[in-house]
Every structure is written in C-alpha cells, then in structure tokens.
Length: 254
Image 1 (cartoon, rainbow, N blue to C red):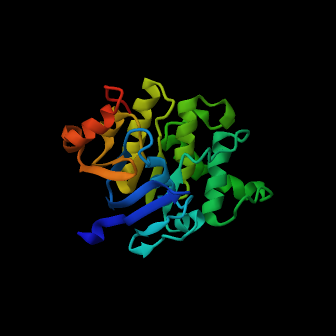
Image 2 (cartoon, rainbow, N blue to C red):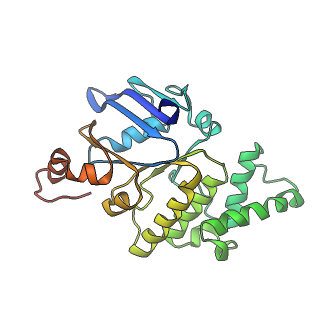
Image 3 (cartoon, helix red, strand yellow):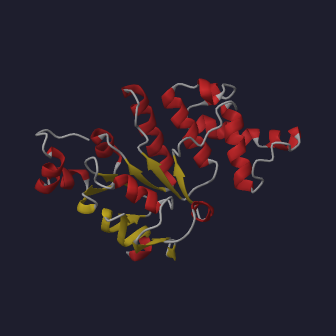
C-alpha cells in the first residue's frame, strides 16, 4: 500500500511568531487520485498548501514525494521531480498570446528557459505541441488572443495548459474555481477530471459541490489540524466537520 502513496507528510507543523498555523498534519495522497484539502476559513489550508509546494519551510515534520524527502527542497527542485503547482499568482505572460504562453512553458521544460531570441524556426517547431495543449483545455480558438484579453475562466484554463506543458506527475491546484461563474466552474471541473486521468491532483477548494463531484479523498482541516479524512459521503456526515463548518455563524459555508 505504501508504494501507492505519492505525497506524504508526517507531523507537519508551521509556527509564525508563536501562532501555530499548521499543527502535526499527516497526509497521504494516493497515486492517481484527486485529493481535496478543505476546511473553514483560518483552518490552515493555504499554509499547508504552501508547505507542500515549498513556498514555506516547515517548523517541524517531514514531507516525502515518491519516496524522496523534499522537506527542504525548493519549488524548482520539486518541479523538476514532477510535482508542479498551478495557479501561481499567474503563470502567464499577459501580453503574449495563448499559444506563445504555452510555447514558453514548453521551452522551460526543455531547459531553454526564456530564450526569446531563439530562431523563429525552432519556436515554430513547438507550435504543434502548444496547439495540442490548447485544444486539450478547450482554448483552440483562443490561440492568437493575448492572455490579458481572455475571459477569467479561460485564463485559468491557460494556466492549466502552461502547467501541463511541464508534464507534471502531480498537480497542486490552489482554489482552481475561485471567482468563477457557473459555466466556467462546469468547464473547469470537466477539465480537471480529464487532466487527472493519468496523474495525481491535490487541490484546495472552497466550493463544496466541486469537492463532492471531483474528489476521491478529502482531508478536512480545522485550526491547523486534521479533523477528518475520507470520501465526501464520510466527511460530510461527520458531526465534528458539520460543527466546524457551522462555527459561530450558525450556517454552513465554504
């Protein structure tokens, strides 16, 4: 069973000046699944996510990816290992077209980071692959449109395409549906399901309907600790989870 775990944390803890944001979190993400990290506001989801993606260093505990200790690795180290975070503030150059954005990501994968001065012929050889990735995320007809002009939901699709260009084994998605209307949510949900067919996905997501539809396993955090873990049916029935989400407001949110 342990060979099946692609990302594992043991006793993961993060303190900020005496405030414990993440406390003793042990996570096990199975290969080939969609795993959601949820919890009420202030639960420590974002801090936990930033620890996993190496934007923060833990105060205590250990993180392993594919059996290798990555506790003190850098974001670039883990990206080379196939663990890639999408929806960074924006992995996209606003004034380049959709196609050019994906092409830059493909160059990065080849190790030719940002050689904008490469010959036109070499760049065009990447256009075929870039076009395929755009088609895969439903952006075929937007290939010549500058990223800045894309509708919001389509910008997120472009970010997924640039992430896929790096050929990740595991994708970490930070609130992929944030700020989206119903139609974009439906489309992005279908896209994540398609993307997850041959890789592992871990996502932080507020939209419970999305979590219910997409996730194989859900870890619920509250006050920096794991409150519950299991399928959506299991965690949504768990009285402690219901209580955490009700909080002082008297109605479920998130």
